[in-house]
Length: 390
Image (cartoon, rainbow, N blue to C red; front, top):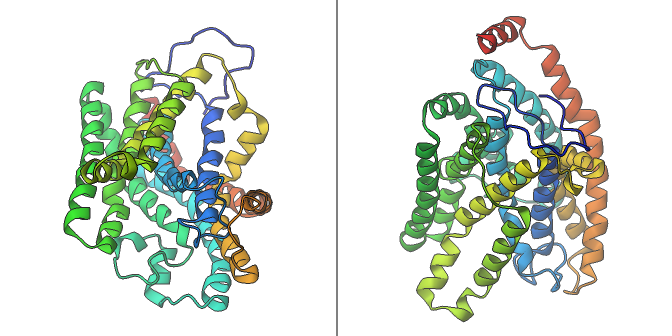
């Protein structure tokens, strides 16, 4: 990918077409850390005063929205893969690159989980569940033990792996369709997510509902909406929206969501709960599009700063490690009484995870990526280069 636009640029360039190489957008890298940090805050403060590592009334219940950081990752993944896609890239070359970027760090981050969760804390598990987690297929099996086996947060990697499997074929089909058709399909996918949640919540048990809503197939609309918006931008479409407007809409929705039972009847309250994931995907893609358009016109904000870009590079490692450290702290010192002083503990733990994330990125993730790049079969690269040039 080419380098980002220089800071002093203020002209409005034409956005790349589907056949061009898209420029790098540094703000998207910074966003990755914000999403990972949101998930960390959710896990740290918990779902209630009796959950998480330390409950902070100052943050709760809005901190629970951080769980949707994983949905943001799915949307961003679909956007980034489509934004950087080069027609003609071999599927096996794409798979090899994804393997080198994702699996080695996942394997190494799982090792401390064995001690923290299963040897010290005594969390029950079995060999099948643990191996399924290592191979990133755990979300396909409703009977794994525990519900999130291995490194618990790796369930999202299982969803990602399924999307990676489909992407070389999905992008070929998407490139043949008109943008309007793709937009209708993306909208239909988000509506289907809402309808599926509605049906499962009213017909199935909470356990079955949660498993279905974590299944890779049910999360495909989130990837799809990211893909469609990336293609729309590459084809020259513009969206008249800025980051401030998206954040204002998100804040308004959050207020409605958390006051739904007090302000509305049971039916409306339930519908708001069931639309959370589709709306989170919508806000995510609008936020992404707003910042991409802003940066491509030469406006580089704080998300493009070097600290945020570095944090974004370390965000995958941050995500892999944070819950293990949370559990270690909880089992070592216990859960304190709820209080806003927990915010300072949260920040201290976050800094610790960042340091560990830097180490995992520097000594595992990036070396593994480079190792796989060096060992890419030459014939794959030559065939892809030839196809891209034709």
